[in-house]
Image (cartoon, rainbow, N blue to C red; front, side):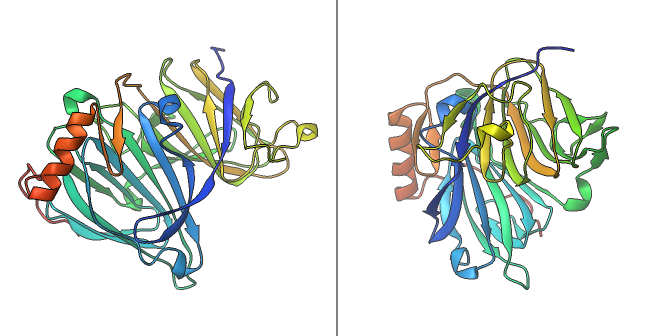
Length: 308
């Protein structure tokens, strides 16, 4: 066996409001980003009350990053300055490389019972790619393979490779992995990762053991009595786990299944200048970006073929 990664910190997601008034849970963001390079932000929007999300995210700019939207339940109508428009439905992924600049909107719509659940992850781009041409990928649920491992774990492979099954999202600058993992009760899941890459997991449902040592990591829950030490730190929903270095991850469950996102990527190691939806390397680059947005010269690209 190789070097198994240990948990170095656990974060509890926190309620916040974004867009035109969308209530969501932020797993990590601006203050935690240096620890999760190349990732900047992870939002969990999960509600069965349309008032929490229908106001959505009207037209706004992005530059210097990639935004990855994964819908579990409900749908999101979208449009952008490249001419793309359509609907992301349950199980679909939108992987958008903003690059030199894009203006888009995302408007959530729940299921008939009102349930809306999805995630948005922001990934940084290195300086050499921040002004690349924007690119848009819409990946349907039917295009995302699922593999079942010998121990019973099931993995939807959005990006990366598991059990010789490759995800449909490829050729991404930060060499990421994006997996939706379900481990049944009383089971284990061993997964190889690249040494040096940043790795985190976000628990969606159930509880599991995410560390071979189980009791050696730091807690960042602002004094809340969130973890039960006597139960060997079974970690539950709305928890984000940061891992140390190594080439393997080992997860296990007790009496219930656990479902989580598992994400990794190659760190960039560059200065970050971040304001709102734009992330560059210097304050001067930020100033230029917002000045261009105000004077109408923000968009550098030609329109792509419309998607639906």
